[in-house]
Image 1: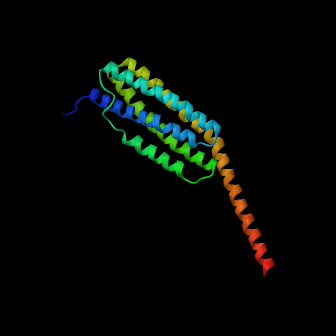
Image 2: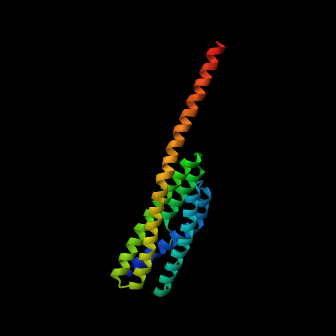
Image 3: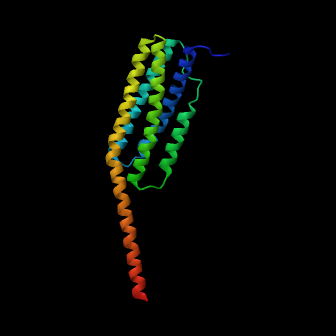
Amino acid sequence: MQKDSLRDLYIDELRDLYNAETQLVKALPKIAKAAANDELREAFEEHLRQTSEHVSRLEQIFEQLDEKPSGKRCLGMEGLVKEAAETMKEDYVDEVKDAAIIGAAQRVEHYEMAGYGTVRTFAELLGENEHVSLLELTLDEEKQADQKLTELAQEINRQASESEGKVRTSKASQRERGSSRSKKAA
């Protein structure tokens, strides 16, 4: 059956977001566990609580629309979650891994902000004022989560950069010691 209305598209996009959020509810505990930095881990744990609320708000919207939230798989979020999982498996030092995790998490946040901005606009056009309020609240929380990650990245990225310098210095010292030993042996 052909979908021919903005309402159909709105419901479709809401289902996509619902699936995206439920994927995140499963992924965020793993991401939090992978974070070495305590503040970063706590930020992910807090965002997990918010994400559960996002799911509840979407369920509330579906109930008001007399629609089911299921039936759509969000391939975009699926790809972003897979990328984050690959990042967590990389053998980086803690600070560098945390910097990589922040990058992956911010891609997720930007994806969500785009989705919520879109459905909020659809809700406005459809006269769904209560939905607009709920979607705006979630959009604001996604923006705040992104801002928190940006703030954490400033310190964590600096630490990652410094750890790189320490590794280089350590490797250079090892080479020098090895060079000195071979000269003495000769």
